[in-house]
Length: 506
Image (cartoon, rainbow, N blue to C red):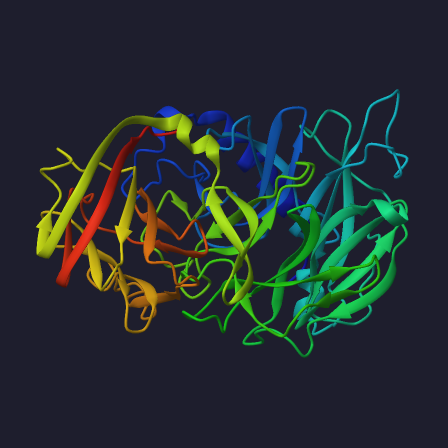
C-alpha cells in the first residue's frame, strides 16, 4: 500500500472539521460512557502519551484515530487539565507524515534548552515518539520503527516536528518503539527507556538529536508472553532513599490474560538498571490497565495513568461513538511488606474535588446476606465505596441492577486473593476472553483490611490495603447498577462503609 499525501490531507481536514463541529453538549451521555474518566469525544483511543506537567497544566496526549472507533493510522490526540480530573480535549497535536504513523512516546520540559529549540527566552517542550512506517512493515523490513522528535514554544499547545527526524534510527529490530525520556541530573544527560522486542534498551543524549546506546535489561527476567511496550524509568522516595522503578508493559501473558503492566525494583546509575531480585511484580492485576506511564516534571510526586482496555477485546467492546478510555490518575508510592518492597497505587487526592455527598455507615454485622441499598438510600454511579473490615473472612460485594446483571467483587481468605467476577455483569458475548473471574494476591497479613472501589458507569477500580493490591475492570450492563449487597458464607464485621457520590466531570 502506498503512502499518498492526499490521505493525510483528508485525515487532517476531517479531524479538524469533527473537532470544530462538536462540543461536550452532544457527547459524554451515551450508554457506557465513563463519567469520571477521560475518553475522547469520539473515535478510537489507546495508549496515553507525552504526559507532561507545565505551568499548572497537565498535558495528556494519547494514541488516536480520528476517523473510526477502531484502531487505524495513529495520531497524537491532546487533552489538558489543571486538576487531573476535569479534561478539555484540544485539536490533534501530531499527524502522520511521510515517515509514518505517530506511535507512542513521551514529552519533557527542556528547561535549560539543551535541544537548542528555545528562542527569545521561550522554554521548549520536547516530544519524542515512534515513527511507524506501514509501507516498510508490509514489505517485511526490520527497520520500520524509528524515534523522532517535535517541539513546542507555546507551552505545549502546538508542535513542530524536527526537520532532521528520525533522531534514533532502527538498528534492525522489528519492535523498536515507545520512547520514555527523563533527565538524569548526575550526568547531565537525557536517558531514553525504549521497548526493544522482549526487553528495554537505554539510550542517552545531551541534546535529543544524538543518541548512544547504554545497555539492555529484561532478556532473562520478567514476563515474556508477548513483546514489551511503553516502558518507563523513574525513582520514588523511600524514607529519604531513592528507589528506582522500571515499568515494562506487556501485550500478552499477564496473570489474568492479555495486556498488563509489570515492574521491577532496582538501581540505576545512568548506564544500567540492576534489579534487586528476580520477582515479577504487577502495577495492576485487573485485565483493563495497560500501557501506563507517569507524568514528567511533577517533582517527587509520581502520577501514573493507564489505558483502560485490553488488546484481547479493545476493538470489540460494545461502544460506537468512541472506544476506550483512561484509568483515573494514580499516585505511586513505595511500601514495605512481609513479602518485600512494592509499588502501591492510590487514587490521586484531586478526585475528592468531585465528591458531592458522603454517607457513612458504621458497625455492620453481616451474616450470610445484607442488603446495603436501603442503608445508603440510593446507589448511584459514579461513586466511591470505602470498606473497613475487621479480621476478614470470605466475602462478596455484589453490585446489580433490575435486569439481573451483577458484578461480584470479593476476597477469598483460603487462597488469600481479591477477585472481580464479571461473568454476569452485562454484555459479555463480544469476545470469548472478556467474561470471567480475575484475581489479585493480598500482600499483607494485617487483620484489618481496607478496600476502596471507584465505580463508573462501565468500570471499577479496586484499591485494597492502601493500594498494595489493585485491579481495574470494565463491564457493560444494560442498565446502571443501582443495588448493593454483601454476602459471606459465615459472619463478617464491617467497621465502616463510606459511600460518596461523584459528580460527572463532563
